[in-house]
Length: 103
Image 1 (tube, helix red, strand yellow):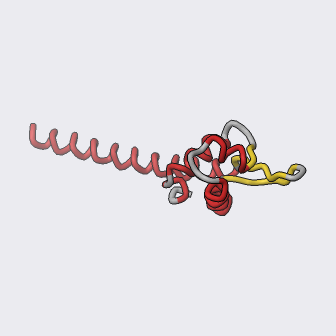
Image 2 (cartoon, one colour):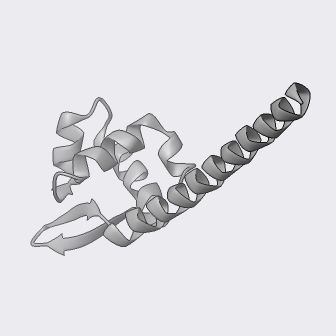
Image 3 (cartoon, rainbow, N blue to C red):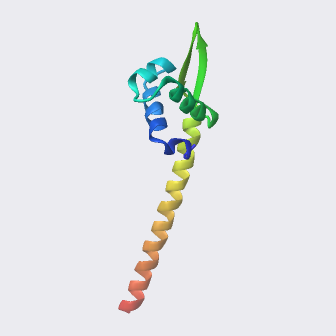
């Protein structure tokens, strides 16, 4: 998922879809890329589970997949927790080292 979101255009597409479902044509109207390029980006986002689609009449609507976003958030939350823990351990280690020097 992070690799898929490494592309700024995919980030923009996901951001626009967070406002609600949209067809490819409408996305292409507001983005500086062609309709086929939008479709390719949507396929990548769909393949990693960040976007779903459904048929509505003659068009296909794309929307953010809440389960995929929840999984991404859980991953980022876990990474953030590990980073904060490592930072805390480092600070505590420096405090101990400074106390030892001062003694």
